[in-house]
Length: 305
Length: 245
View 1 (cartoon, one colour):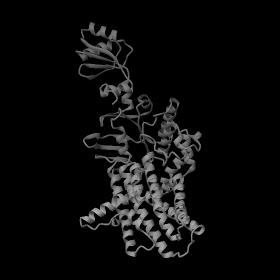
View 2 (cartoon, helix red, strand yellow; view 1 turned 60 degrees about the vertical axis):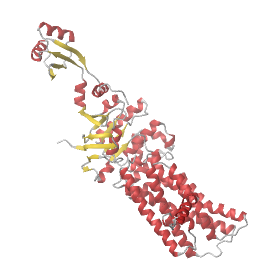
View 3 (spheres, each protein chain N blue to C red; view 1 turned 135 degrees about the horizontal axis):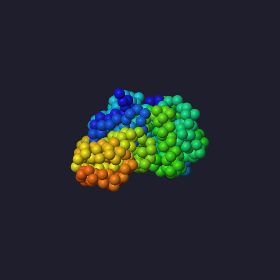
View 4 (cartoon, rainbow over the protein chains, first blue to last red; view 1 turned 180 degrees about the horizontal axis):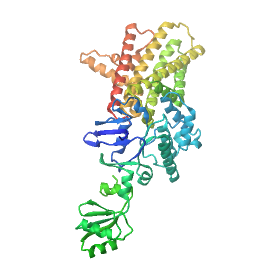
């Protein structure tokens, strides 16, 4: 039985007649890295705020670490979040910001705070007030604040905004280590879909407040892998022709359409073989895409709102 | 609760405005005393403290807004408010922290009055401890009640500008004179005898003196306690209804 650390049940958030989130039912497995994909205004941040108890649902509910909303009890303290801009005290150093949050959990362990500073790469910040940090440094501090209190779940809303490529790679490595070494479950959203695809084990696609699809990374890789799409009038006969060409794995994905993942035989040869064997070919094309292409195809070539 | 209190106290200690406001509270008496001295007036230590208290209330009211609004303004509330079991824990932690600070502020004011009256005025001539302590106690309670009102404004309006303006207007006396008094006069003309003293901490603060009657002091305490209960409850409801961030 799958162990979910977070499960939502028809979770909705309405502002008047506007449905920022509408009937979202999804699950995040313990120990996974879940990528929330959606364009601006799709409802990602609204969803994350509800999970982090920063916003109350209009209807529906969720379970977090075995507790049901609103009686989350101690489960609330198991989430660390970075939602929108990092919330920091501009007059305090990185160390003091982290110490402030650590006080919320009781005893302050200065070694742990120094460890968090090291993890997010702010060792050189020293006593500099956080208000004078660059955008990237503020983002790192925001991630650091989310790590205070040894959370079981990290909710990160666009955490790599403002980071340079080296910084993005560092944060990616950090998140992967936190996931694999400490078993922290991560819910992350980002516009940089290429980065998400390097990190996530599962994805949820959200558009206009609704969850359109959930998919694992394996399924996504499978769907995104290059393949030949062949639309014919007789799939059974076409499969026999393909077998004669040495292609033994052709799946019928819909009526009259075959998906051929073995791409060593070119489309010209396949077409010729079909014609010679009197199989009518309506369409043959190379397909395959990345996460971005997959997402854009799903929402129908939508532009960012 | 202890965690929230520890955090709020730590943040308060780290703010420059904490020390500046305490200094200003100390300076209130000095400023007031120097003005009196310049006009060749005489005033006892007790009278000087009372006279300075309205200016002190203005400064501490500004501090309340700054302290309460900082978490919302800088977004730190996102790191903390979602982790507490109840929003009342979050609110009470802020209130208790401000209650502690108010003691510091009143102590600074009293110290400033004492030093100035010892140096330039008649010292503590004619000083009576019991009425003075009663006065300080009621003033303290009224300031806490006022801080509850400010907390409600800050968390409802979600910025510091409007609460700051309202706080300054009220504590400077302008609000009382511009709003309360005309309303009382109009109601009086309509045959309704209404005194804002029964619902306003600030009006009670302005009228409070060491020779205020026991009955009026009780009314002031009741108004303060009423503010604490009503406005903290309203703030909790607002936090439940509105998005925290």
